[in-house]
Every structure is written in structure tokens, then in C-alpha cells.
Length: 411
Image (cartoon, rainbow, N blue to C red; front, side):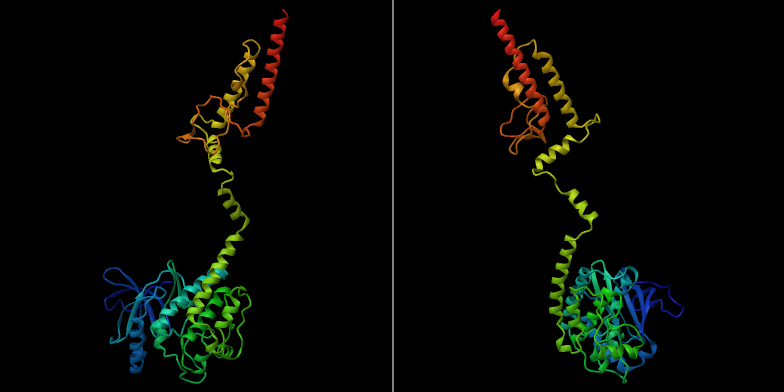
């Protein structure tokens, strides 16, 4: 919420609250940022002097503030304090940090279907608590919804209630925001919870399109469209369009209840969020795949990563093991001609067989010491090329030994 410096005519202290900044101004009064002695920040609304002299207004304002105290829910700005007998009546609500829905859309563009549905589900759930307290907001719109880190919050109950907007005071006029008022408000019919459902539908359509479903124009034009024309939902995601159209029905009886709306929007939000996760951009999908194990056997992948990890000498385990195997092979070739046949198991076994899934480990290493040759039956060696070389060496050595024995026998 934007903050502005205090003007010369603005109060510096209201009740027990110190005033720091202006948060905004409306037809009923000015909203300030204040704090109490403990440092708790509040949004403090002070009513205009001319309205403060209207006794009927004061009585109506007192009834609505009393109803606000009964609201229990995390989707509204909690009422902290109020003074209905002051020269200029005021009330303070919990300060909610974060931009309004109107400002977020204006600065960042339209929201995705999953975001719109999630915000709508939270708001409709909050309206359930509001309506259970016997209160109708009557002026729900994007600028009266703050997107706090803990979720959306509905504000400006007091100003909306203070208007007494359940009926028209004069033909062709209505208190509220054209484009978000329900038809019954324009006609002068008593408002019900369905009135807030209409306003919430128009608000969610704005979040998805950055425009009112009844377009732009003067107040009279907008009010006429609300009563006589169908809403324009071009640009609203297909997953949301049927539900928002039901919210914007001319007849209040045809609109869903806040509880039904909350449940339906939760389903849409979950489905759309799942669809977004399955349809991630390629770069994001590749990043996820890179984090996913590539080996069929996790222990085999862990061993491979450890072998490829450089040691203190700057060489990897894999390189050191390969060099040891090559040295052993060269030693076999040097000793093959003159030292007689070596034991069969040591020549036929691979230098470092891959451990089976059930092989034991000690501190993340194989149980056998480096350089000790072992055999593993039923497993394909990790290095087929090295195995072929060893088989060739074995065959050559065997032939040489056999020829040597035959020659010795002839002598």
C-alpha cells in the first residue's frame, strides 16, 4: 500500500495512536498509518467532519462497527479499536502489508488461472465468516483486497458499511464502485450475501483480464450495463469462466453461495496448479531432470559420483583405479613368459568388480582393499574392454605355457 506524507491539516495523534503517514483517502474519510505505544501498526480511518455531524450516520456507523467486532476469520483486517463518540469518529484495523490486487495487476499484469482461483478461494472463505457475523461488505473490489504474505485480506469494511448502500438515496445514484456493484444495489433492493458474491466475481474477472467485466465509462453507463447487459469475460481462462459467469448472474438466487464458491475455486486452483507443474517450461523441466537420479540403482550412482570426485591430489578415484589396473596388466605381461602360469582365479577375475546391491560397505567404501582382485559371478564387469584385454592375455599366456611344456617333454 502506497504511503504519503502527512499534510498540514492531518492530525498527528488520534486516540492512543500516533499518526505517521497517509495511506489513502475516500468519500467517507482519510486512512492513516498509525502505531500504538507497543509499536503495533494499524490502519486508522478518520471520518470526514461533515459526516460526523450527521446523527443518522453516527448511529449506522456504530451498528456496523459493533458487527465488525463479531467477525472472526483470517481473511479480514481485524478491528483493533474505535471511538464512536469522538468529534470525528474513527476506527483502527490491523495494518496489512502488501499491494492491493488492483496495484498488483496494474504493475505486473494479469494473474494466471491458478493464482486467481487460489485468491478467490481464500476470499470466498473469508466472506463465509463475514456473512455468518451478519455483515455484508457491499463494496468488494480489487482496491479493497490486499495481498499480504499470509494471503489476501479484505479491508475497508467500516467505510463500506458507513455508506448505508443497501438502497439508493436518489434515483440513478448508488454508493460504491461502478462495475463491481450488484444489480440489486443499483435498483435499490436490500443487499444480501449474494451481493458480495457478485462483487467477488467481478473482482476475479478483473484479476484475470485487468479490466472490469462491464468495461469503462461514466457512472450512469456502467450502472446501466450492470443491470441490463451481460458481462464480457473474454480473456478469462476457460477453467474459471463458467463459475464467474454464475457469480455475475442478474438474479441473486442464481449465484452460488460463498461456501459453494470456496469449494469450487479450491478444486480449480488445485487442478490448474497441477497442470502448471506438468507443463513447466523446458529450461525448468531440464533443471528438475538434472536433479533426478540417473542410475537405476542409487548406490551405483553414488559410487560413480564418488569415483569422479577429485581427491586431494587433484585426481579422481576412477583415474587412480584405472592406472592401478593398467600397471597390474603390464606386470602380468612382463611375468607371463618366464615365471610360469599364475593361479587361475587371479588371472580370470576383474580388477575391480562392481559390487552387488547386497555387498557390504565400510564408511562408504567397498569392503575389499584397493588393488585386491576379486571375482563376481553373474554380473557383467563394469569395463568390458578391460575384460577382453585380460582374456586375450590369459589365452596368450596359456598357449605359451602349453608350448613350453610340450617342448620340455620332447627334450
